[in-house]
Amino acid sequence: MGGGSSKEDENQVNLDQYLQSAEYQQKLNAVYSGQTTQQQALHVPQQLDDDDDFINDGYQGLQIKPKPNIATIQSTTLSAQKNDVYIIKTSFKFIQVGETSYQLTFQYTCPEQTQIDVWFLGQEKQRTGEIISLYGNTQLQKQIQGFYVQKGENQEFSQNRVILDLKQTKIESMRQYQMKQDEFSFPLIVKISKLNVDHSFTYYCTVEKNQNQLIAQCLGSKLRINGQEFLTKDVYGMNDSVLGKKDDTEKEPCRICLTNIIDTMIQPCQHVILCQECCQNLRMTGQRCPICRSEIKEFIIITKGN
Image (cartoon, rainbow, N blue to C red; front, side):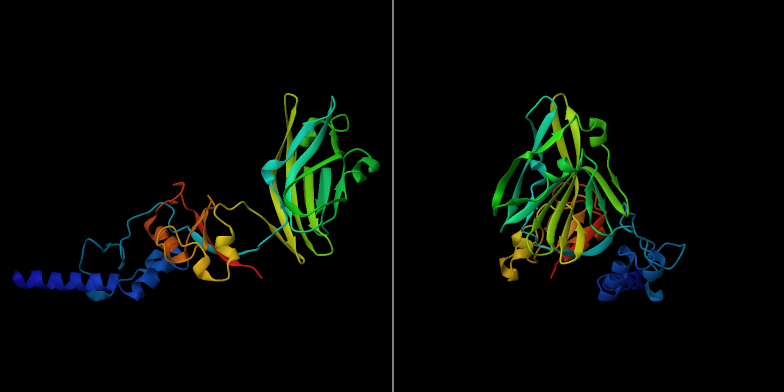
């Protein structure tokens, strides 16, 4: 009987060593990254197939306790583009200047002289990038485009020609939008562009009326740099300390290990607070975002764009 106990102890030690091996960790990562199935990857050597606590009789392999949605979590690599010309999305607002007329204002930041264009009831052709306006007549459309603004941070855009008159359109049409593969249609499109270079940021908004107030809400934005276009998302935690420093010692460390640099975004909450290694550990244990405790569906590894 003592011999049997010694054999079980030896098997347990061998199994523990195998679970700590690089070979097993590589197989485990393959499962959680979706590269292979659990049954294919988590095969245990025959000599270790004695422990009922770890072996599922259905097949030779490790019996993994189920974690919610772990196997479906994917990791993606994202190239982050640093941009220095933009409009603050939450700053879009309308000021009533007449019984049915409202002036558009917002805040912008640019390091040099910049052009701003506005389209009410705008339509953008995705193939050519051309934007047209269905608002009013040609004269009304032209007077709210081609504004040259001075450089600076958090500058106020306030032009008395950028007026939305509800006599020219029904408020119901200002709520409707479409994002098709070949065309974007939005009640309000605003574009800020650097001069003499191919660098711009376009914002797509809807407009709602609440009593006598008009409220603009930005639903999406697109960055264009040197012929490449990127639909953008707001990211919480992305700043110069993550991408802007050339020396890694100057970048912010991961909030968990406090050693590696932050280079990974959690989806869908979009918090940028962790390194790849700690994200992998969260993935394998099925844990939630350390900041907001929301479910983790995907990790996006962020690299600095050219």
